[in-house]
Amino acid sequence: MMEKKRVSKSERKKLAREEAKKDNDDDDVTVCARCHSLRNYGQVKNQAAENLLPDFDFDRMISTRLIKPMSRNSSTTVVVMVVDCVDFDGSFPKRAANSLFKALQKAENDPKVGKNLPKLVLVATKVDLLPSQISPARLDRWVRHRAKAGGAPRLSGVYMVSARKDLGIKNLLAYIKELAGPRGNVWVIGAQNAGKSTLINAFSKKDGAKVTRLTEAPVPGTTLGILRIGGVLSAKAKMYDTPGLLHPYIMSLRLNSEERKMVEIRKELQPRSYRVKASPLLLIYKVFLISKVLNSREFLLGQSVHIGGLVRLDLVSASVETIYITVWASHSVSLHLGKTENSEEILKSHSGLRLQPPIGEKRASELGNWEEKEIKVTGSSWEVKSIDVAVAGLGWFSLGLKGEATLALWTYQGIDVTLREPLVIDKAPFLERPGFWLPKAITEALGTYSSKLDDARRRKKQQDSTDFLSDV
Image (tube, rainbow, N blue to C red; front, side, top):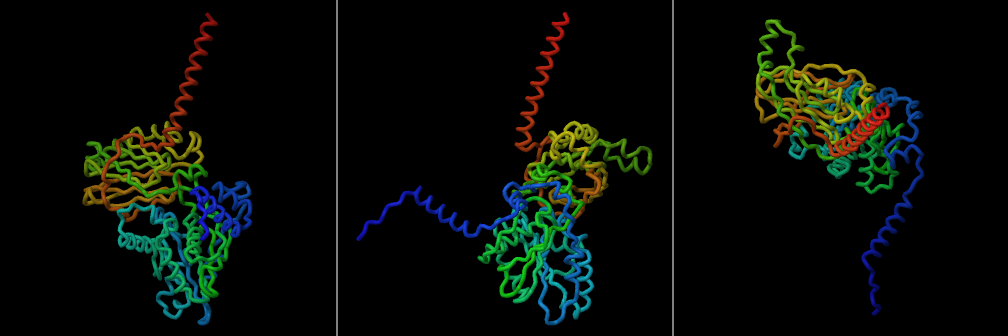
């Protein structure tokens, strides 16, 4: 018998790397410079050329094709609508797909027409980023309720998935195949950066199909045109990936690439809760309003919460001494809790520095003007959240109180703000302290910035002393 050759651990790893490289070389395809830049650097190669690209007209290119009545022998059409769980109201296509929704709603009353219209499947992605205490049953009920509030017709199915953690992908793919049949057409639609291409790539991995990987990047408008995806569905069924629907009312579109990375939620959301106190003067706010003795703006002595330099929430009046505000946003975004009377000065002094994003002192003026939106809240318990205030493309506030309160939300003009039922109803286990809440990256950057300022002041002082001595 021949002795087996002993192979060291390092040699086994080297052989495994070579085999993996050989497999990858077989699947390598040539991509354009734009896709190469997006895949490897997360940004477009030529921003000037990108601005010249026309917007994708969903109604003209897709809606008219889907709404057109089909004959009895024609293939089944399935519309997979992808929505981001952590930004549901900002990514839900309530305006872009309005014509499709109206056609499907009319068909509900006419069974003959309804059989030939598309089947609508709602897919909520990135569920792994939501807080773990949300039960699947509650999330399913909440998603259906928000879809109905957004104008969606009766849905054929609702699925919660995570392409990154491979949650629910297998069941969703099996259901789509069942609806489409052997000759059906499946259209994947959704807002920009909702996760359409990532979902299709997960389909191809799950089914073991040899499909060219679609370009994924956290950049709005990554997909430029309609792409036909072969090999995912069975027989002669076809799947199409479509460009992201443009939502001009979301915060992330106002930001540059570095700021967009800060607001993007990449890890499981963790609560940051504050106990916001009402001034004793605010408790008699209603009396003054009724008697019209004082103007409410002369009377703002409560507290305010800043989310970076993008959003501010003021407690204007309350029938109770305290309310609880929980911020659900990326942990790369800084927060601040302080007195409302000092909020303007805080924003002016720290926007772009401690309050990031935006990044840089001059960026705040480039984003536009702020506008105020009044919010009235009623709650029955401090232990359970009463309402969510969602800011499209950024995150949301959860409010808990036992009584009534009036708040003012300040943000840039044109940004969509939605009041909705709370997604997370439980109270946070701990509270943050008043003042600044800064991520590690901002703290380190501020340390370098502060040291440079100190050096500049020291050099100026030395120069002034030298000038004084020379004059003497």
